[in-house]
Structures are given as structure tokens and as C-alpha cells.
Image (cartoon, rainbow over all chains, first blue to last red; front, side, top):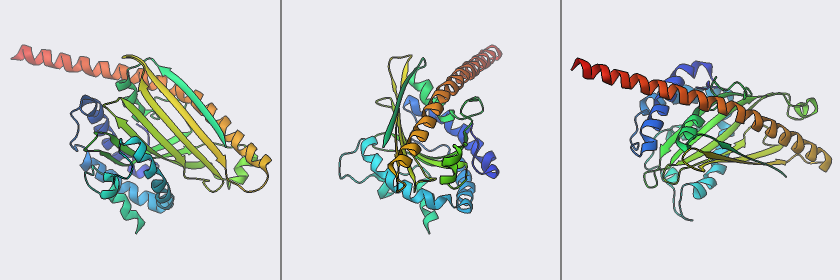
Length: 105
Length: 192
């Protein structure tokens, strides 16, 4: 697996990545993967990464890019025009997004 | 604006390619050394469509031509934000990315799609749009765009070579794993 931009997060990242890859290849691609099996590991990793991004000032750069990329959802999430995505409504979240919005404060 | 486009065929199934794609920049890839880190920012499965949406932050380190480096403020580390969508139903991976660093002078938007050509072949289509935003002479803008497109095509060539190694290694590790499991099951059956 690839490294994290924050060396202190490498260990937790490695654990999460392995979990995800196993889930992806053995369950998700076989249509059996709707449940969140790696979320505890992801939360550990995210906790570490969030601090690293803040320290490096990358969190600010991310805010704008994330806004821009929301436009891509309409084309790639098989949604019609004008329908509110779950990304915005905050429902059915697997993991991640909500934690990162906290960065903005 | 300048456009760079490229397409490749990999002799692996879409499932293998889309799995290996998550570790495209692991140590098995000795060619794409400009990517020094890949971090996952968020990930979820859409309940309605089953599409897996992932946000990642990609960190690169590469030396730009001297004249360009001074324009970019002298740093050689840059960040790219990527959103990807995996649709297991239509067997399609779409990845859209844009540069976070130097975004005041240069906009780089890339789109990559992986789709099956057959049960054992997968197509990779890449398109990048490069726009220099710096005010001033058209000549300077053209030079900035050309240098960026040039780097894109260089990275694309190396990226294909590196990814081939990752695919090969992934297949080998996977078959070894399968063999181990098979032996384990056999052993258990014997003990029973």
C-alpha cells in the first residue's frame, strides 16, 4: 500500500487499507458489501489524518475542491437533475464525510 | 487550454484492475515514484445505487523545469484531490481529479475511466484538461500548458508500466492466497 502524507499515520492507514481491500475484492465486487466493516479502523486513521491536514494547512485547500467536485456527483452517481444527493443530505453515510466537515470550523 | 488524452488496454479482468487500482501507487510500482502518498479522506456506498464513492488526497513530488518552478513558488510537493465512483452494476470506475497546489496559476482537471472490453480485458481512458490561469502573455500561458501536458504524457507512460507490475503482483499474491486457503481446507477435511 502507499504511504500517508503524515508518517505518523502510516500504521493506522495500513491497517485500514488492508481491511478495505479485502472487503472490496471479496465482498463489494461480489454484491455482498453494503455494510460497514472497516469503519472503526477508518476512524482511527481519519483522526490521525485530520490533525495532519490541519497542521499543514491542506484542510483549507480541500474545502474549495470538495465544493467543485460535488458537481461530478450528478453525472457519476446516476442521479437526475435537481435530486438532492445523500452527500448533501447527510443520510446513508458510510464514513468520513461528516468528520471532515468539522475541519471547517 | 490544452487537452491530453490517452487510452490503454490491460489484459486483466475489470475486477482485477479495479481492485489493483486502489494500490496503484504501492511499492510494487517502481515507475510512478512522483506519487509519494495517497490518503483516503472519505468513503461510502450509496444505498440507492450501490456506487462506492471515495475522496482521496494524492501527494506528489516532482521537479518542474527551473523557469516553471520559480513561477510556482519553488516548492516541488503538490497535492491533488480525487473523487472516484465505482459502479459494480455497470462495471465502471470513474475518477475525477484536480490540482490543489498552484491552483491560482494552473488548473489541471483529469478524468479516468476503467471499463471492461471483455471478461479478460479492461480499457483505461484518460483525459486531462490543462489551463494556465496566470495573467499576461499568451506565450507564457502556452509554455506553462505545454510543460504540464508534457509531464502528463511522461507520467502516463510510466504509470502504465508501473500499473502492469502491480497487476501482475496482485494476481500472483491472490493465487498464492487461494492455494493456501485450499490447502487449509484440505487439511481440515483430513483431520475431520
